[in-house]
Structures are given as C-alpha cells and as structure tokens.
Image (cartoon, rainbow, N blue to C red):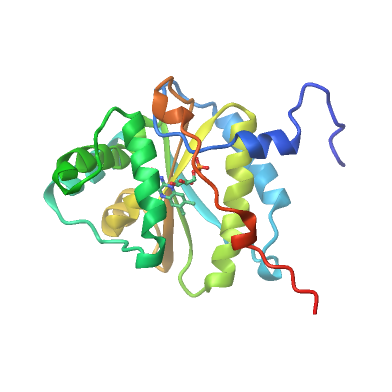
Length: 227
Ligand SMILES: Cc1cc2nc3c(=O)[nH]c(=O)nc-3n(C[C@H](O)[C@H](O)[C@H](O)COP(=O)(O)O)c2cc1C
C-alpha cells in the first residue's frame, strides 16, 4: 500500500536536487534499522531486466570496517593501483572536478608539480573518507552491461533515500583499484564482478561536502528525434 503523502517529508524533486557526494564523515554509527529501511525501499522501486534484481551490496561497520580500511590503506601504500584511465575526450570533466574538490580541501592541486598534493587528497578514498559504513557493490560476473544498469537504478534509489534521511554517501570506483583486497576483506564469493565501492555516514562540516559539481547542458546528453 502506498504511504500517505506527508507535509514533513521532502518532495522527490528536492531530494534529487539536494543529493551530492559526501567526502568527509562524522564517525557516529548509522542505525542498522535506518539502512534496512532504505535498502527495502530502494529494492521496491528498482526495475531490473527480467526482474532478476541482480544488485549485490556488502556493507561493513565496526571492526569489519576497521579491518577493511586497514587492508586498503596498506595496499595503497605498498602496491600500484589498477588504473581506470578515462578516454581523452572525457578527461576535462575529471580535471574540473579535481580542481573543485581538492581546492575545497585546501589543496593546491593543479599542474604537474602538484602531483603529491593530488595523491594525498586521493588517498582519502582508501579510508572511505572516514565513513562508518563502507561497502562494495557487485553483481554476478556472467551478467552484462544491461544488468549493471539495473544495479545503478537500485543504488540511485538507495543513495537518494539515504540523502532524504540526512545521510551522506559517496560512490567510489577508486577502491576497486585493489580488487583482490576487496574480494578477500569483504568476503565476496567466487563469480562476482566488482562494480564500485560506497561510503555511507553522517556528513561532516568540512567545505568539501558543500561542493556543487557542474552539469553539462542537457541538450548535449539527450536528443529528441521527430522525423
Ligand atoms: C560509479 C561512480 C564512481 C565514483 N567514484 C568516485 C571515487 O572513486 N572517488 C570520489 O571521490 N568520487 C567518486 N564518485 C563521485 C563522483 O565524482 C560524483 O558523483 C560526481 O562528481 C558528481 O557529483 P555529485 O555526486 O556530488 O553530484 C563516483 C561516482 C560514481 C557514479
């Protein structure tokens, strides 16, 4: 049964407008019941190819979270990450974002000579920016891109629902640079394709959390054909 609309609930427009990635968290725990509520609703609203509901999310808190962060930070200090190179035509987006984000963290990061500052800022990914809930998003490795799309639908629902409850989140491809660490520490069964990491928690006050990332003109992304 549909929940009644309530005056104190934000509208879906304002939830979508206000969601943004969080990259600094308070250490306070997130009640499991709150996560559970968001997961159930996210699942309810997510479409998937043949209704296979192929999203898999492994979340860790407490000592499990500490162990995972320790292993990832260690890996990031002692081994070369798997690269996720962007095709040249998309790189300017990342450069703009890096400037916006890391500038907000007080790092002067642009220019070749600022490699160390960029590296220091990037390393915060491996501790999930201090989030008390850390996760890995995966799906069966036999599935295809179209099924990854369904995982995205579930995850978008989930992060919007978190945001509507004042919880922050950040999706993190960066942590997938160490797939074996994720597989081992998150105890992923064989046959899982790792898609992304996720950090969840109560946002900190830091300036980086108020960065509003840019968007292109929608006309560059969507076409209407009439003839
Ligand atoms: C699949 C995916 C992977 C991402 N990986 C990272 C990451 O590794 N580190 C990070 O700081 N942000 C990461 N992000 C967040 C994006 O940078 C962010 O969504 C984008 O800049 C738009 O900003 P917004 O989420 O604040 O609207 C990722 C987002 C997505 C969807």
